[in-house]
Image 1: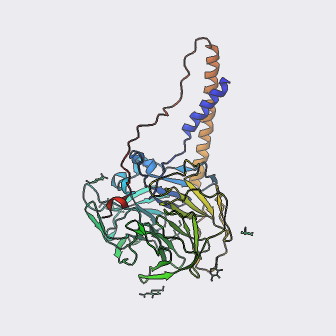
Image 2 (image 1 turned 90 degrees about the horizontal axis):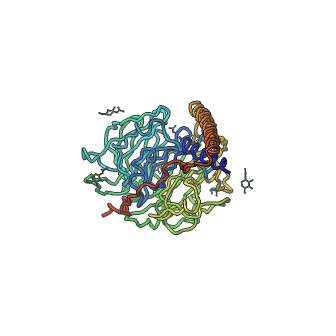
Image 3 (image 1 turned 135 degrees about the horizontal axis):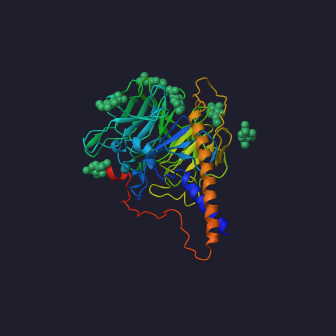
Length: 451
Ligand SMILES: *[C@@H]1O[C@H](CO)[C@@H](O)[C@H](O)[C@H]1NC(C)=O
Ligand SMILES: *[C@@H]1O[C@H](CO)[C@@H](O)[C@H](O)[C@H]1NC(C)=O
Ligand SMILES: *[C@@H]1O[C@H](CO)[C@@H](O)[C@H](O)[C@H]1NC(C)=O
Ligand SMILES: *[C@@H]1O[C@H](CO)[C@@H](O)[C@H](O)[C@H]1NC(C)=O
Ligand SMILES: *[C@@H]1O[C@H](CO)[C@@H](O)[C@H](O)[C@H]1NC(C)=O
Ligand SMILES: *[C@@H]1O[C@H](CO)[C@@H](O)[C@H](O)[C@H]1NC(C)=O
């Protein structure tokens, strides 16, 4: 009986030693996959403790997608020396969601971070920062041309030539800096940036998808918090080469107007999968066939989310659409209380039937593409460093576990000897909840700054 008690204490201590990161819930953040890691940066939740995300490890971390996992036990990890290296001081505050982040660089292995706010000290737009994943190196990037300036409901996407596209939505002024309606195009290889006209698409909370031919498809979203009534009926195809915006009318089962959605390209490059949003429509998923621009509701099996999520992120990793965090409606989060994971996995490998699943299988998938212009699948090089790390981690974990067990056993034996004059059993850890400081709701930038 008592031994079991000590065993529980030992297991508890072991859990502290091997603690996995448990990030706070968030919306309007960035999720960037590189090298079998899905990096998460920033975001916030209304009424959350502002201290939460001052913690570097709650601000920047990744989901390890190099091996199998179940969504009930997510392998969140932090980068080495994150607390020391993360340049939090030169990033925008969490109130604005921080920044827009996307992949780029000569080797396509660096995240570029575009700030949302002016620097309070210099009153200048903060420079672009970068994080190189394989070398774990942060840098300030000195891009020539127009200095890009983000906002939390904008979507950012990188094309096949290393150019980042950041659509600013519409003109507005925040902290004395004016953002001009337009499309920032930042070349992460030549290191320059220009602002192009995008007046045909003045919205936020939209979806953007990179097609296999290099064009971008913009759809959905809202202006002044009112979803565009034709957001999915008329989509806009941006030709990145000749800089033209081409409206395209769609047919079929057109989704109702919505904002806070995500769109990803299907695995065969011939359809766009729309997930989530903030409206009351109970259907989570629509698919647009980009051969004939016809919308349909796909066959979906498995236990999907009960509450529709918005202002989340969605990335295609392997055969899954990986959905991270999000809110249920604009200001609420109900999914955790309902036992749903921060990560949702939709297996999109079979076009006849998508499947909600809780287990992630990292095995690379071979897919027959309809054309040769298929998007390249992520490289499947194994990462020896990570493997060594896991082996060391497991070994150290086992040694510590055995040690704690032995200590527990010794302690138990000792206590049995001193059975008559017992003291209260020390309880492990300070599990106290720190005082939670509430900040006003409506923290969402859109609601504060739209004039
Ligand atoms: C910058 O200054 C503004 C107004 O003075 C303030 O509201 C904001 O919180 C400051 N931001 C940071 C990151 O200190
Ligand atoms: C950008 O400029 C800053 C200061 O001028 C410098 O410290 C930094 O190294 C430069 N970054 C790169 C990537 O060259
Ligand atoms: C960069 O890597 C991403 C996946 O991480 C891939 O989708 C994209 O095509 C790559 N781009 C280039 C230019 O290789
Ligand atoms: C740009 O190319 C697209 C085809 O990708 C074409 O439909 C459009 O008319 C072109 N626009 C201009 C301004 O050349
Ligand atoms: C997409 O449209 C093309 C052209 O009409 C059609 O051949 C194809 O079967 C459609 N795909 C789906 C999944 O409906
Ligand atoms: C795809 O799903 C359909 C419908 O459930 C099923 O008949 C078919 O066997 C599946 N294909 C594969 C390759 O699993």
